[in-house]
Length: 97
Length: 123
Length: 130
Image (cartoon, rainbow over all chains, first blue to last red):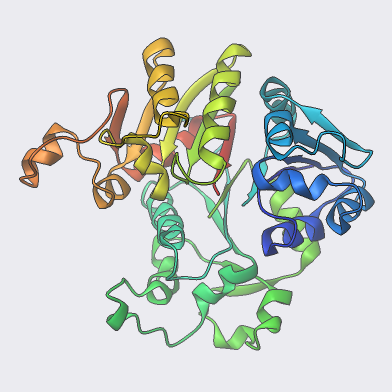
């Protein structure tokens, strides 16, 4: 049961490694460049969803990217207060950047 | 610091040894944890395994020999350096090429390690 | 819960540093304790006083200083990383015979022992890089 944070581009090794290690008990929070991995039609967003992990994206970065209406179903927007709430539930956080 | 339960921290290394100062910063963190007798586990993923390659000679770079310091970690009670088996074979090296403290970890073991430590620091 | 953060990236590059300070603010607003923020490697550049930003850019280092001022947040710059990047307090500026201290208020220089202590004493430790 692990919290993954991902702020690397969808094509990066970090993102690939993250996808490889995800389990259905995990949560992924996309922020920074990581939000693009949540785009509908992006192969990475499919990999993220296939893992069964809960997927969230930080709203300020989604807004900056202009992709709020283009996120895949199953990617939910959160703010920093919710980021903290999620982190309280997970002992460990793996930062992929 | 409480003696009843020492927190166990996993240090994950994902970058090559010399191009980014992060690898050195991570290693210095491991050395500090050893010096203060706080339990740490070291895991090398992706490009991080390159930090363990043999015969490093960083003299012309003017940087501390990263591989040598890693190989000396058992002196600081860090007995094992866990290595992503798939990443290692992808770059054409075998476990016998790496320092004696190196051990292979497959995906299942890596997941377990990530899930079972109290904290994870990613370098 | 007792939170500590490890910040590895500079305030003006990537997304990690800004995310870290917003997370830190939310930790405090959420009623948790922000025990320590440790700035290591490029993260230590956060404490550099002499930066001049374009008018249309957020002063991320200023957000950290404000956190220290308003809530007494403990912001530690790894001394080795800080010195390498030209961030010196009065003591180090004198020691190394530099013209002036270059560190922002609200920050302190400290060794990796403080990061190790945070590892031992915190309920949650998060890394922010990139």
